Each structure stands twice: as structure tokens, then as C-alpha cells.
Length: 225
Ligand SMILES: [Zn+2]
Image (cartoon, rainbow, N blue to C red):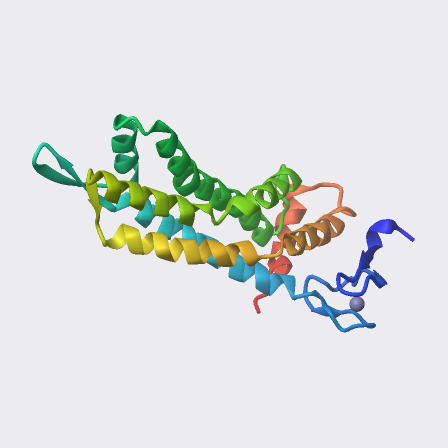
């Protein structure tokens, strides 16, 4: 038997044959009843919608003013980027870079990487570099919630230096919502994606001519829940 056809139950370590219908149905361990698979297509739809919503929320969070700067008596509202530039100019380069990475760069990379993997899979084909991107997502995942800490640090510094005050506007609420959304996105099990990619690969393998046939199977690839 092919080793790739076997899975171990994560609760009782029972070695089981991988269910072939794992993309559509759920599967439970026959010994202890632990959930081995949820219906992957349902998860896929859910996580795709959430990732799109998170990306729009991200744009709102970055596009609207989040702090009000006081420059020589004149106040002006600025976005997170503007606040970071102000921090940089106040000789707080390290904090500026740390906040930039955790609140702007990492969420953007994570969201675009997820979309890069999710959208082609939904359309019925496996994008190039699928494995590498999915591993990268899993690798950066533990750092996913650090933006909360970093935004907290930013707010603290803003208050301490009285350089600026936080604007309780759209951007701040968008950040709150984005944090919750990313927390849910992080709960998503990437194994489901791998299984769907496996199923797509197996379906495509007997057909030698590639792209066109893959596109034709796409109608069956994403059954609507
Ligand atoms: Zn079990």
C-alpha cells in the first residue's frame, strides 16, 4: 500500500486508510470518533470569503487616518504610514520598522499569499509554487497576532511622547475588525487545501494535455454547499 494513502488519528494514533471522499464529506476515526476531516469545499468557500473581506478591511485600516499629529501648532491627521514616518523622524527607527513589519507588511503578505493559493484552487487548478507558499503561510502563522501588540506599543508611544493623539475613526475600527478576521483565518487548517490540491492533481493526472482540461473540470471542482 502507498504510504501517502495512510493517515494517523491525531487523538488515538490509529493508522487509517485516507478516505477518498475527503474533499466532499467529513470523516471520523472509527476507534475514538475524533473528527479527521471536515468537508473541505465548505471550508474553502468560507476562508476565501473571509480572506477577501480581510483584504478590504486591511485597505480601510491603511487608508484612513489613525493618528492626529501636532506639528508646530498645526494639527494634521495621518494614516498609519504617516505615523510611522513621524516615528522614524523622532529617532525611533527600530519601533517604526517593527510596527511597519507587523501591522503593514506581514498581514499583507499573509493575505495575498492566501489569496494566491485559494483563488486558483477554487477555480480548479493548483497554482505554481503551491507547496512553498502554503508552507510559508504556516511558517509565519505564529507571528500572526503580533500586530495587536505592535499597535498597542505604537499607541503607548504616541501617548507618551504627546507627539500625536489617536483618532478613534474608521482606521482604528478597521484594525480591530482585521485582527478578529485574521484570528479566524489563522484557525483554518491548511491540510484541507493540500487534500483539495491532491484531489485536483489526481483528477488531472490521467489527462496529459494539462491546462485546458483542468479548466474544464473546474465546474465540478467547487461544489456549492
Ligand atoms: Zn482516533
